[in-house]
Length: 214
Image (cartoon, rainbow, N blue to C red; front, side):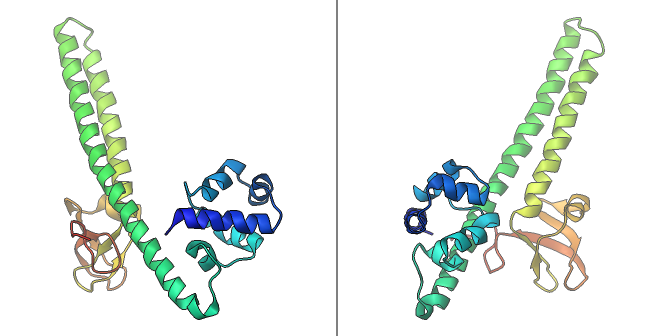
């Protein structure tokens, strides 16, 4: 999606309706700074207010995402292009999230090890006995919190693919958290066929899997 083009289109339609950035923002319950970011191409309207924005500007969602008013002749083509682009952007966002998951895991493990080492050093220096379990406990708690956060990222980023029927879906947090796993492949029950299989993590509902080139 061309954010600059979309931003200019929003600004154009806003001015046609004789609205200032502040007035449009107030109608949407947001700040005028957010509207300014849209119109300068720095960000896109959030999906939760997109329909309301389109209603106020008297345009369709396709018009908004295309950055111009789409004729009925080109409507289906524009819809398809917008859906493809939104899917691509989701894939990119999911890929970044999964990279963050790895960083969180490494940093939390290092912090835990560091806390244990520091606690042991303090004990050797004659510090009170309770210092070691305190630092170890702090390190362990942050490690557990980070692990749960990483699992949450893995749950929502991309999809899991059933080895039995090929169905791709987003499982709930409990299913991911409680499942046996090898890396990002987890042993779970498919909601489509009901079979338990080792399900791999994939980035999209199409054919692309994690690690494949674009």
